[in-house]
Amino acid sequence: MDRAVLMHQMEERFREEFAKALEALERAPDGHWIDASEMAFRDAALAV
Image 1 (tube, rainbow, N blue to C red):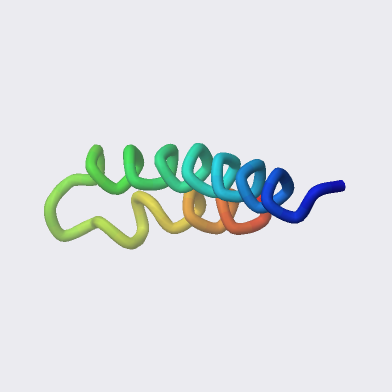
Image 2 (image 1 turned 60 degrees about the horizontal axis):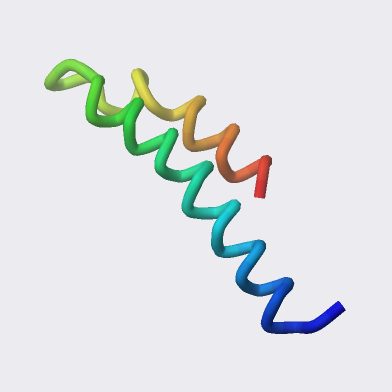
């Protein structure tokens, strides 16, 4: 597989997964950013 193609695919997946995590962070109430979004970031990291 072409390195540039693979890198592009990995970057796209990273952006998609972490966009989901950032959405969870944005929905988190003030003072609860970590506990309201930590699992979304964990899941995003595991997915990429």
